[in-house]
Image (cartoon, rainbow, N blue to C red; front, side, top):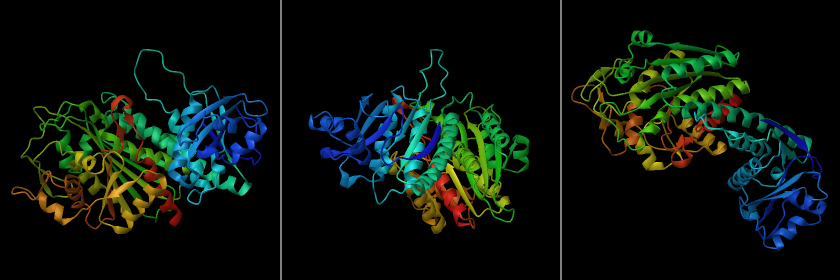
Amino acid sequence: MEFKTIVDTRVRSATACAIVGIYEKGDLGVAADLIDGQIGGAIRKLHVGGDFAGKLSESLLLARPPGARAARVLVVGLGPRAKFGRKAYRKAVLAAAQAVAKTGAADAILYLALEEQSDLDETYRARSAAEIFASQRYRIPDLKTTPKPRPARLEELAIACPDAKTARAAERGLTIGAAVAGGMAFMRDMANLPPNICTPTYIGNQALKLAKQWRNVSARVLREREIRALKMGAFLAVTQGSAEPPRLVVCEYRGAGRDVAPICLVGKGITFDSGGISLKDPHAMDEMKYDMSGAASVLGALRAVAELKLPINLVVVVASCENMPSGTAVKPADVVTTMSGQTVEILNTDAEGRLILCDAITYSRRFKPAAVIDVATLTGACIIALGNHLSGLMSNDETLAAELEAAGQRSDDRAWRLPVGDDYADQLKSNFADMANIGGREGGASTAASFLWKFAKDLHWAHLDIAGTSWVSGSHKSSTGRPVPLLVDFLLQRAASQ
């Protein structure tokens, strides 16, 4: 999909669809007021007649209104003017994207960015619009034999701006939004595939394809023999019950000098999580194909960074395998030795994500990173704590945690800080090893993060638990693409501060 900006203060540009807003109580937005004068007051008449109240996300299409240069005028409700901020703006843009997708319009102009709001700058408005419209075009890569629904016809979206300066800021937002949307689609495609296709080998091959596509990206895929040579005993314990071979994927993006320490993103890539010997409840077990969402998200963020050509260095480490029950599977009470040399008593084989991540975090040390952020669908406890709205954020570094929280706010992909440290690590004590891999039901998200915390000592480290935010269940079951927006925003700010 193509995005561009135009300067149009008179709302006279020719387009297949002009998108304008109206507030409640008949309060027409900037563009709606102008276009209403061109079409004989039709929009105001709709409100007076009770056909359009202006409630937030309400929409109504006017086809070929006489006097307009637009073939269609889509009127979108903005809600009360006094409450029109970033949340209302995103909802209105989403409603517009959904409504336009149902038409035959091949191009559209969004005039909603002309509305004055103190908490919405031009770059943010354009970025949000690009992300939302691109996401609406996304289609799940299904394997149905029935005819596919026709793709959305909308191929071009223009953001109307009042002047050239604003247009330049909006152009930057469109560039970022398009890159973020591309990274999200990359993540969603992998996560939505069935686990017999999206295997650890497949994830490794996708990383190699990224390296071929983007000049500043290199990729290596380590096989089981090489993983064993690294003495990643925790990682290998998880994979030993599966016929699928594990992969350790290592990607490097160089956008800055070799003397600049990289940011390292570590992703959990369990392509199917049965729970192992500690078998999961069969209900919704199919959704455990999404247990590689952490891996998919860090690779999606890498893709966006490469497209944006950010002046930073970035390393992505993905530990990927299946967690399956078999005669060779790891058992409760087994003790394994991690790459760091620390030993772990495995009390629950369904607490496997932390086992592969602890070795991946240790591996990341060889890059002498400025910060390490691991991303994982780690605990159901995080869903209980935060629902499906916010990702969990734990960190041993106050500055890094604040940066990630701020990135979540800016990108509308929010994370909420949860505690980590000795209080929770004490629950992991074992009589037979340096630590156990679980610490009881209480504070489950924090004890899981504290397990990783023990391997991140002296690193600037943060953990994102995306178990509740990376996919949705039910009739609209699909990957959400989160937390790609948060990660890219964080990396944008790091790049700007270097």
